[in-house]
Length: 237
Image (cartoon, rainbow, N blue to C red; front, side):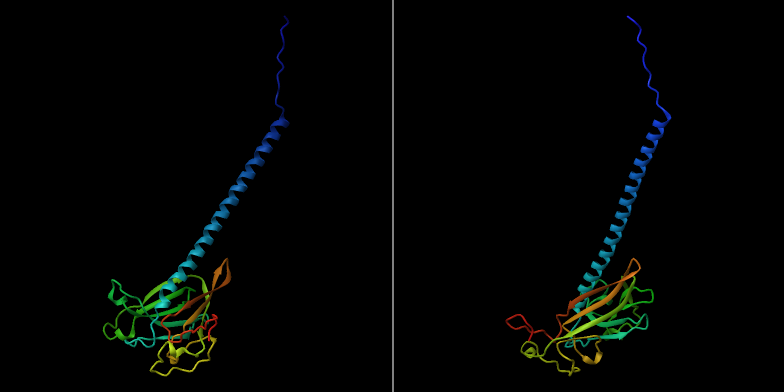
């Protein structure tokens, strides 16, 4: 039997180059895909944080605004009016609200609040004790809570409903308020009105990706005497 010679297969240089190029293309594709996934995850996390901040703001304001006290309050702590801020032409809202029970007695019951935008474009809730208690401890400092960052163009709207049949539900106030146009949204609210609107809107812009995005939150004020009366068909009278 003749000796059979084994045929040896040699890898040529061009095959090595082809394998190297294919490997580099595969690694490049995997690296690009990983980078894209990382960027998407970062953007998703950023958007989730932005949405969390807005949700927190809405819930925080939703826990405060409905507790704004009535002008008929027996303690005579009622304050509710807008003022023009000196910074970036924003409005601010001054009001008294019932904070309830707190471990710090100075932050219990009625407090004076102010919602405004500061010089650093932060939406801030400033809180003091109600003016009725200023004589007890006049050295109390303001509590400052930043609710949201990068905010501009803060302004408000207040709804005054039609008056028809309102007195059948709520007794008229002993004090004479200013006469306001009914069934109308008002851009400002004066201290002289001596009334609490039943509904209000808060408009502001939040800078997202260096672009101002408008937002609007609407709240009801259940302690208002300007109640909205509905007829049987569901429309307001």
